[in-house]
Image 1 (spheres, rainbow, N blue to C red):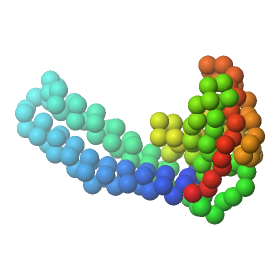
Image 2: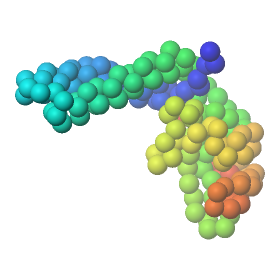
Image 3: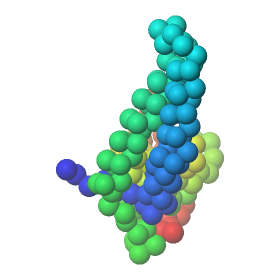
Image 4: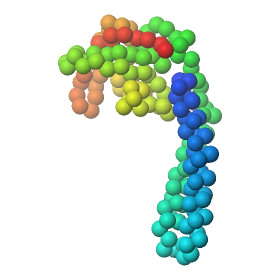
Amino acid sequence: MEKIPMTRNGFNALDEELKILKTVDRPAVIRAIAEAREHGDLSENAEYHSAREKQSFIEGRIKELEGMLSLAEVIDTSRLSGSIKFGATVTLVDEDTDEEKTYQIVGEAEADIERGLLNIRSPLARALIGKDEGDSVEVKTPGGDRAYEVVSVRFL
């Protein structure tokens, strides 16, 4: 199987989510199922069916997280330098709007655009790879072509 690149923060966040699912959420849903069973007829017991559905989701997420963590290749971004690559924290300026944004380029498993964590497979990240401070990049987006200037590249 192919290794999944991850930052230390991303790995720790997924590991913490896994621990919570196993130690808090799983026992809670098992208790909820037991309580719902006490209400009698399971065929028309909405609480029971809801708890079983939640249990299915939790067990699926646990398996997904265990799989990702077992394949994780944690990359120490503080030891990197140079042009933009995995782990870089990049500040960009939109050349049309002068809006400044900062992203860290991370693996798919930890990507969250709302928190500034940009998926390495996204069109913007792919366009940025190999660029340096002062470079301009053109990116095709669903909303049309965008142009950005790289203001800074840091490895934290």
